[in-house]
Image 1 (cartoon, rainbow, N blue to C red):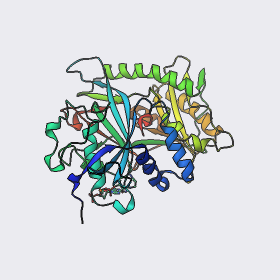
Image 2: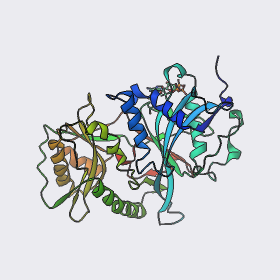
Image 3: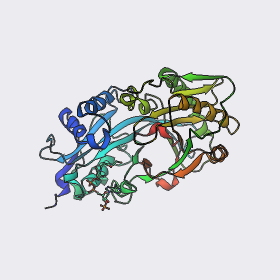
Image 4: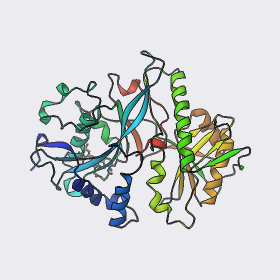
Length: 376
Ligand SMILES: CC(C)(COP(=O)(O)OP(=O)(O)OC[C@H]1O[C@@H](n2cnc3c(N)ncnc32)[C@H](O)[C@@H]1OP(=O)(O)O)[C@@H](O)C(=O)NCCC(=O)NCCS
């Protein structure tokens, strides 16, 4: 018998429910870890800078009459993040905004195919979106009352997720089904490290540890702001920012695996001495995928890109990395990458998909710096 979806709502998970969400995802996301290690890794994630001060939340879809049950239907996680919006019709200056990243959407096998994840995701807009842009008066009556308000939410100007289930999330709109998250920007450029012939980068460069990357991302945020303010692209523009621990999340999530390597990597970025060309990265050592260095943020000109790639390949070789991966290079840099033996293709997993909570449609919106740093 199918469940009347209006009897369910979205609730912030209790601590017990949060642990239950993690138990359920061991096979999916705890590759190579024991249950204890998996639970420990997920619990430590709550101490990361990007999670602190209420920025991390677990959500469950549960019966309204028993919201704290451990037998909830499905769950997901959100990270509140810093972002920028430029709407040149209103102002040339970028506005600092709150936005959200969504992760770990999961329905246990026994509950699948009953519409639970779709309902959870369409309700999720109603706890994330800025209340003035998605007023409770527009909540579909057929779904019952809107989800209870949680302190510190209902302030998001946009949200995004990285889909491993194709276009499913486009059908999870806040009011009309087809107005969910829109996939944008899946271009992926990769180098095979063993056969790469890019020469070692010349010039004066500085290697960056965690602290060095954090400092760089503070400066980077200023450059990202100027790029967005000076762009001629029509329509509103948005970006996530790599500050407040957002950039370092990429490597911290993989720490447990990296610590098992004979020589755990210590270097997470490189910058030219004038800080105009740089890259930061994470290294994913989990088999069976070839060990991959994924660039999280990159800033380079067509003149400096070749040298930067040469520098990135140094730690890649040192740590026995097989693939270097970059997301959504500009057309100019993508062409140069092709001359350096890189391949560019459209990725079929981790598809970036966003929902804009303004009155404009997603087709009118530009996503700036749609790179790996904001993935979660
Ligand atoms: C994806 C998932 C959350 C869907 O949960 P659910 O409660 O069964 O979802 P719903 O019943 O609301 O909707 C099912 C829809 O998801 C689609 N779907 C499920 N798995 C899919 C996949 N791997 N690729 C594409 N679509 C998929 C189904 O085709 C179905 O679409 P339809 O309604 O148009 O027929 C669930 O299958 C799951 O937890 N999978 C494992 C973890 C995972 O991959 N999570 C997503 C990470 S981005």
